[in-house]
Length: 463
Image 1 (cartoon, rainbow, N blue to C red):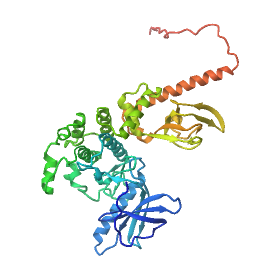
Image 2 (tube, rainbow, N blue to C red; image 1 turned 180 degrees about the vertical axis):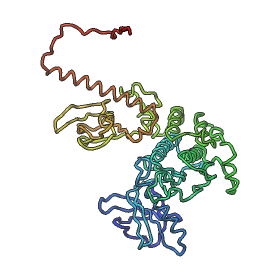
Image 3 (cartoon, rainbow, N blue to C red; image 1 turned 90 degrees about the horizontal axis):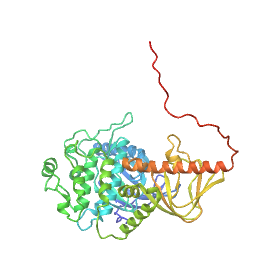
Image 4 (cartoon, rainbow, N blue to C red; image 1 turned 135 degrees about the vertical axis):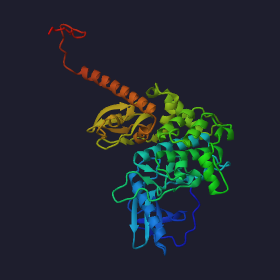
């Protein structure tokens, strides 16, 4: 899925400690290289921004963009946001560069044409994950302000990665940093009405832009189009959002109100947060009917496997689908270490096939098989994320890993359901442990009479 290599004259052999492999992107203000970290041998993407030139004004603006993107990027840790590893400002070389996670894939703008549309289940999954990523970013005090298909990358598993936070609004700036240095930024076709009007912005402007992308991925066209910017702005501010189902009759009817709510001009009627947007997408997911490709068949097979597990006994179908979107389905070889005693981590998992050994202080505690949960104690503990045991695969393992950060941004219904299922599992194990301990315990003292039951008697005492 690699992009076509852009032509760059005299690309550098190294950038800092990184060995340049090849250029992978070129824009008006930056060049992106694929590089290798000479210390870790890991592949990274490096965005190089030139700061020199005869006119200092553009350089100052580029420096602001660089500082914003690096400051915000270093703060964000989410599976659907491109991770920023490092930022370097080389004033003597009149350049700056940002070292980022390398995503081997394509930008979402490759799939917005009517002849290049993604399967419907991929579209819903992509937007669902972007909703959670934007919700997370806003909780960290970040509004992206330039959500568009070109700024959403798809990896080889069709997982979205939001990138390019250079125009972001940082609602929690450090002292000495300006969080509102540019007004009216963004890409016109994806800008919200309040963004066009230069009103104060919050998460809802990003959700509007994401709604535009959803519209485009479902229909192969933008909701508002015009031959000139003035007409486009007028239509965004004044015209109703067209019906996606009218443009694509094969779409489930439930998608229409979702798109319209995401693109509401009235802020009070629009989605209040990304989690609500994602929740509605989950509800419509089961309505999707189409000729399944292999990926869809695999998703359905996984859904039915989860449906048969006792852990998901009390889950609604939509909650099982939502679980699939926030988890990783892993195949692990024998003797793989799932988690180690003493390390920190709140992710937990469910064994689908195979067997694991749980040990503490290098002594075996138990062996667990299909439908059993591991790692739940560090997830449930309110203050300590430290693992209390080591878990090793005894056989080849099929394992469902649930990302705690993604779960925190999922619907309240799913969070409650999972917490309840984990509590039942922990209490069941505690009862089993009590029974085992009783087998080796001393004889119990036999009571002679049962303590009285009932409420205490109240007597009125005269003054």
